Length: 629
Image (cartoon, rainbow, N blue to C red; front, side, top):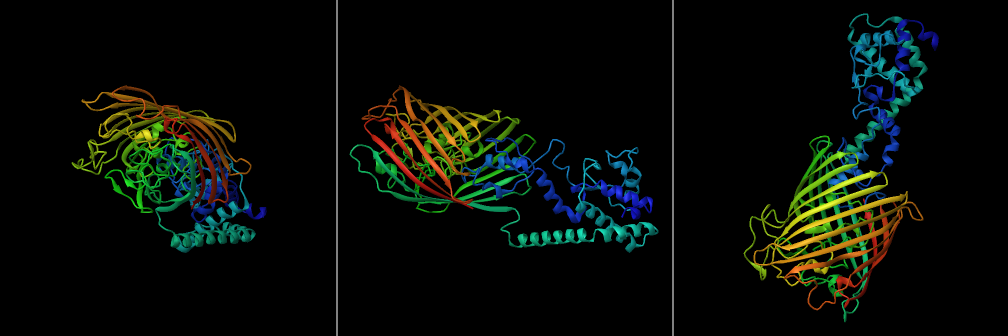
């Protein structure tokens, strides 16, 4: 073959061209194959799984929002989108996000890394100016020193053959020399097999793409979902109560994730569940144990995947039937600068925006109790109600790769022009959380997330809340309702909540995680002087890939929210309670049956439930099956 290449200077120039081709320099008919090569070269970047991420990058593929190994639940939000985009944008130290896109050059001087002193300069110059079949990178480089494969050689040859055919067809003059044609003919014969294979591969990809486009759900939207079916049983509870029957419950979520620009994300979530509760907790497991608040079903005996207000639209105190379809998530996320991302929605939760830090969070995959999943500060004001209670807007600012600040403002009844004049209870409106964007119950929350090392994650939280009624809004204990014990239910309250969460992965598969929280509650009424302080803490060990890849386990111990102080007219404990520090002990093990199915048996034990030693030690057992698709 060499003698044909040496037949003319142009033949030598063509050899120089091919020798300098790189995988992404093939011309348009090879674009899809070249992208596959680029992805393979960066496979290692897809294995990174940091517990928090901080900035939007260039691509969104909502298919990866369902990752059974790493995904904690289907409660999609800002943080999952941020993590997703970082996972999908592999970048080497020597390339920019756009550096592998092709750009046709019209002069060899446009290639910054090709100098007149280079041995192949004249050959490249000839091919650019005479045939126009050289493509460079947008950063004005050619990268002529890279190694090549026979397929890459065939790609470059095919590109120049196409260009020559165009010149012949247009008869623009004696632009193609007879010697060049002879050389190219021999090269084409030499690489017939490779050219045939290459064309076949491109045809197959085009056919597959056409089939996918014809059958896809939408060009901009992906559908995924999660189904939880669980058996729950419990013993113990309030004295003189009989044990509840074992119940079978479900929760189904369908999420539509849409991107209009490739950098933004619109999340629309629908859900249905068959948990009961309503305004007085009737039909709930917690009420049958005697551990629920007289209003609602707030309790320390609640499971992780149960909504905070089951069977009730707390905004208007209207009922929600079993397995009624609800819009639980509506949130739009979009970057406005390299380090700044904004989000807004009419159905959102604090955990949508704030990294959870602890590995126990996962309503369908990890801990089985509401207590273990998140710091209580994140749950204040219905921050994680499970029904997208608040309208919210906020930002994520990436201070550095290891430090970011996130904040939001949320309004619970933003869709109501004013509070109802009707009363459900003395001093409590039938729209108990008020009305208007700035007039009703609201919250301002912030989180500073710090990652000082690859094995250590720290989250610091603050929340300032105002409630139209005497409630914490966490759903974690029965004392959540009537937070200021001994004070009327219709008394508005202000909360200042502080919390911190830490996770230390001291080995690749074992992590130590814990949190601490303090909630300071004050009456927000000129006629009432009352205050209370709640504290809570948790510590646990999380085991990844225990006994088998994909199987996770957790052991958790801590103190649920407990009144540690009271002032003014507030009581330290409700009348009739025998005050005692409550404790929570939990263990679970998740079996990964397949990529889409997992089964989690587990149990948690409550000592001095609800901070009252009159209550019996309570055990709640759960067998949870989760399907993701």
